[in-house]
Length: 211
Image (cartoon, rainbow, N blue to C red; front, side):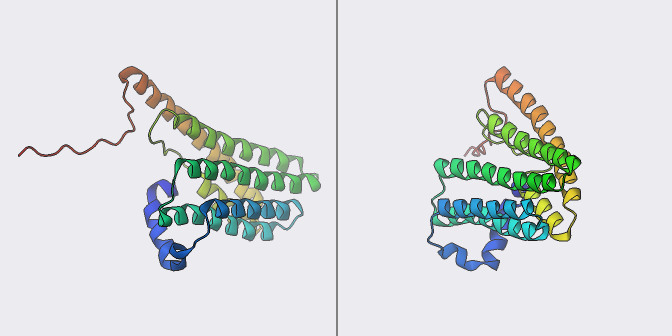
């Protein structure tokens, strides 16, 4: 939700705060891989009981996730292959974090916590999967309450302040609502596509005025 509504504003804000990003010569894919490794570090921290450290490391992972796209756009190197790689690695990063949290809960014999993490992970996977499937047929599909940016932000904040379980509840419930929203909207749009043969999400070109 935040990315779809404020993506351009976020880019401009990051450029003002970190003007050196435009001069970074590292490949965006390299930043993506570093972000995955940082996510692994967050997962290990959560698994070993260092919850606040895990939250802080997750903030760093989120910064790398933001940097790779920003650097790609600054370098003019955005591509379908890069977008595919970034999305795939985002899913891997999510899994590493959630699995780390689940291991941490299991080490404390917290069965309820493991169930909660499993719910949150399922909601996160469904949220991403439904969008990916919809975008195989639709040009644009940005629907939902809790997307990846919100999910990572909530977990990081919850870990830092020591209320990880609360964050998991919000992510699980918000992710479930988002997945259901996307399923309902995608079915409606795809039915319209089947009926009319035209993608209802395509942005219409402005009609030139007659001279």
